View 1 (cartoon, rainbow, N blue to C red):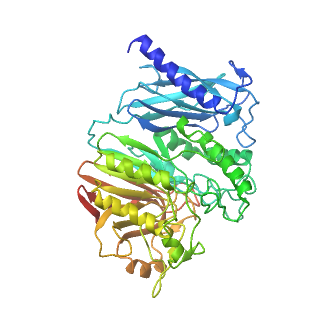
View 2 (view 1 turned 90 degrees about the vertical axis):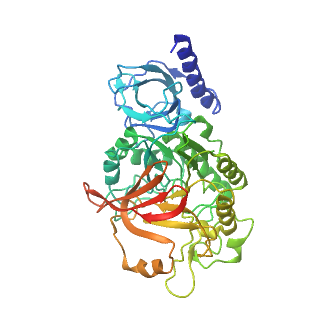
View 3 (view 1 turned 135 degrees about the vertical axis):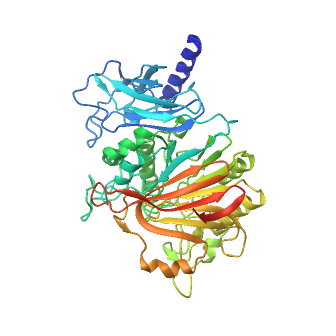
Length: 514
């Protein structure tokens, strides 16, 4: 690469960093040569949102991570380096980024000009301290047809409920990326029965949320998984407030007060995730839905099912379907996101089209015996919008729709029917629901209480309530999902094994046992 080309690209990278800060207001003071008495890289490093020519690299300076970070109200210049080997001796590129107090001294560098489908190593330096080394792989070019994509998806990592043993094993997998589907933190106070404890009462302020993220990100196994692969992230409810819906809180907090809390939560989320500047929050809004492409093999539509949704109908919780659930105004995605999703799916040239989202899309009757009960926090509470989406997938003949889901602390494999209320309607796609990393504790393999429920829901092909993640291998002709589970999380060090595997063949919607 010619020197002037590299310098131009480096300028663009720096410009992106500064433009994001300008949106928050002027920078008062800058420390070009910072001095630290303690290591400021206590929260590790991360990379995210891979593109053919680069990805985001992230860190946050926090020498006192559980006390607001321990940084002065002063911006700090941080050196970053990226190279083709972990010794940083081959293809070295470097630059400076600004850690500003307005973003909690977090850093988001959008790398450009890298080779497609290639592993890179990165690190940061501030004062005399160097960060851990992370690695990330760029995506293929849009016209490429990769032979395989390997990724894992996970969700729900309640710090108090268990250890992050699943991440220990995930970091040892041969993966191209990780997708996190929400509940990265939990907002509640200090519990009495957990194996670990939260660091405060229920969180409300920006400083509260920053300290809670710092507690979670201080976990060594989580840091290891972040440093090993690029991540694609989206949120669910606990990043703000349990079961919140749009501008409605769980406990009917006044709207203005809740939007202030949501703004604090959204800013802390951005500060701690490897997100691009397009997701820089503006008050209580943050643009999180986006599209990630891997050549012509797979395209991920990453959804936000919290920020724009209507309140849960039918009284919330579990309830029979009521008129409110069928109201045409009831929305999970909001008008703009729904339109964006349909446009992207219609234009996609990918073999596999993946919806990475939070709550179960398939309808599951949770009442054994006569009568029906559905979870109103899931797509069951948004009947017409779900019907539009599934009909769109069928009518437009979208290639190999796959839905990946988190939220419910259990593993499910389900067929998606064009009309969920008519089990005889055609199968249009498959949904893989992943269990939690730690939430709800150890879990069980197969509780007897679920057996009758499954018998009344024939589209459910698998259920399991242990902890773990789902590993996916995507090839042009076949998608395989392996449900990876650990026996316990209340004690560290549990081994991992594959509890079940399912495949979907190209052009043949529906699950088959591998």
